[in-house]
Amino acid sequence: MKLLRVGPSGAERPALLDQGGTLRDLSALVDDVDGGLLADASALDRIRAAAGAGVLPALDATGLRIGPPVGRIGKVVCIGLNYHGHAAETGQATPAEPVVFLKAADTVVGPDDTVLVPRGSVKTDWEVELAIVIGRTARYLETDEEALAHVAGYAVAHDVSEREYQIERGGTWDKGKNCETFNPLGPWLVTADEVPDPQDLGLRLWVNGELKQDGRTSDQIFPVAEVVRYVSRFMTLYPGDVINTGTPAGVAMGQPEPKPYLRPGDVVELEVEGLGRQRQELKGA
Image (cartoon, rainbow, N blue to C red; front, side, top):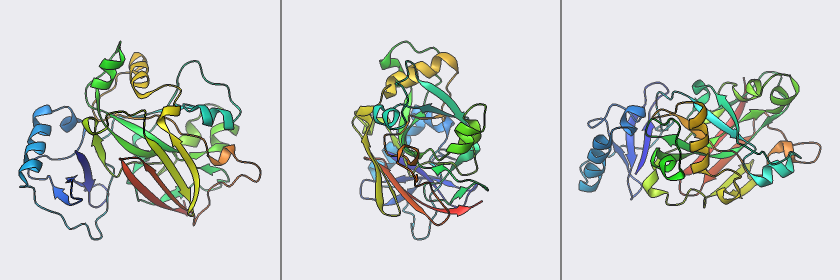
């Protein structure tokens, strides 16, 4: 299934994108697409049954905003330097263990919402990523099979980053990763049963129509199952939590000088194979 949330920011309602590309209203079945729904197998079965029976009312998509596909996210866990190509382009050694950092949940916005370039920023960068959405509480998982069984689905994420704040201002990466609007997510949550191999997905990103990133998840240093298993050793993962799994080569930081960092007025488009497409216009904060 392709689950999503539509409507004004803070007042989104649950929806489904059917196989014919029609938006269907889920409001009569569930209150929201959130951790509570993703952990409730019977509720998900009711949605599947209603979708199969063709009884869900259609929504008019004209002018309808698409919000983040998951509501009330508890935390966004991110994996840095998780593609061989990205580590190479930035001149960094392949990490021996996953590089883990956090983004605040309030950085998450809809897939086509405006992204704000922070005041004073000169190094705002792009990063297309595969996002994992957790469906079952995960603690100390031991096997890859266990890990994948705790995944509710996948989505497109844009891990926007301010490199000066991240790298040159001291401390951890947090200052460059948690600026307002720095995690567009969606358009859909695609349930795990529709993604048979998360290590065989293409990721692409364009800036002002120019292709900048063109990679595959097969280049990940730590694949999806290992990431979920690893993270569960250090923190409890709850239904609705999101894990951004890193970005392939092609970011601005990895380009020759003058590096083409993002500016107000730029347009970024990105996609992950089978998971949908995003488009953001950048404005000054």
